[in-house]
Length: 402
Image (tube, rainbow, N blue to C red; front, side, top):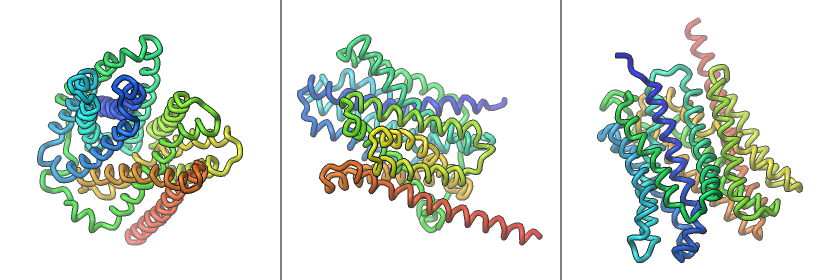
């Protein structure tokens, strides 16, 4: 029977939507947790820290053990833990004298699922026999963006209609998506990137020069994206005088919308484009957006820079994966896991650099944004050099054939 790889693609789309729910739902409730459970804001700030640190740990775990356990088992586990963690938010905090412990347990559970999704969904799609895989990969990653927008907007609508006191019901409703997707991943066709035992080891990857180019690109991609994404709400609040709630909603939402538009455009027309050229142009636009946000005296232009930055970074993460995979065809799961880890490290380091420079400059956020422009600069240089080496390689091949 002919295998239905479209079902695999649908499952992976829902996988990224699940990851978006995990990353964005709890932050909408931080002030609610603070008021209802009397949890200090300092402790609540640990929630995203634990979430992202655990994702990094899962990246390392996947690089070493996923091939032994199997893709299907691991991706099904990702949906089970995501559903349990999200639904658990409605019940588990009330079981402890300190509700923060219960919240943290749930965050740990669904962070495991989120980390597995981040590492496994891309290689699952890469292993499917689709044409123009770079375009398919870009469209796939756009579903994380649309998931972010959907979670923020639909949750806000739910709270406006039914009241935020009913957030536990919404947590259970969001958990239905990964619960349904368990069936999809359990029954869809899943292929292996490499034959068992034939993939490159971590040591072999470390000895490959191009691998380090890909890691550099991924660090810059994660840093360029999250440095702006995480500071855009503060920028909206400080520069335009938005309320904190409006800044929190407008910044991430508009950033995710433009990022999703970029990935969707490349997903539709990528077969007609040169990926390295498109990424280089995106890097230049990203640098311009950082400079606009950091140097413009107009708050409106600065905010436009923040929003357009979402479009400019859209291709960076999936594009790096699409550049690396065909050049390291035996990289297997280890390649995808280490690339995800590099992106997460960039996502952790970038916002930290912006925040540190902002504080040292007397809480001048524009100075922090200017420091963040180093990431798209490095990415542009790396892509230009990569493009030259690619052209040189093609020229030598043609000369040899001639």
